Image (cartoon, rainbow, N blue to C red):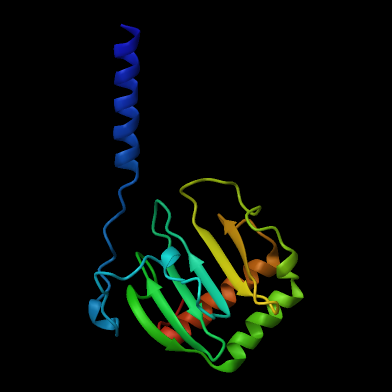
Length: 180
């Protein structure tokens, strides 16, 4: 009897997790606004960065259980960038972008000012699994990659300022006005 009860609880738990993990339907943004169509082999944002890449800065927003914009932006030292938008992102799909030199310089100045290289990697946030995260990876002068993850927007103000700056510059480069 006890074993049957435990099996019933386990089945109910698995069903409720499966139902809770479904994503709402997209907002119906027109596909025509994406200049580079999705490739069937396109990597997810977390897989988009290759170890041998020489990128300078990577910014990623992860999905949540609601309508959080999820996208990844990888900027090379010369301003060339790769954008991969997922659900609720300013644009969905892949797009090649070019940022003016001052955008990367401003971001690097913000990172240096906040002493990004001294920040803990994954200490900011409340640890909720369904909360969105903002992940910044920066190539330090030594060539090392330093990543700081901020979950649920709970991180130092300077890091939040960097997130807002990168969001705004990404939207500007994509030609998308306003905030989401």
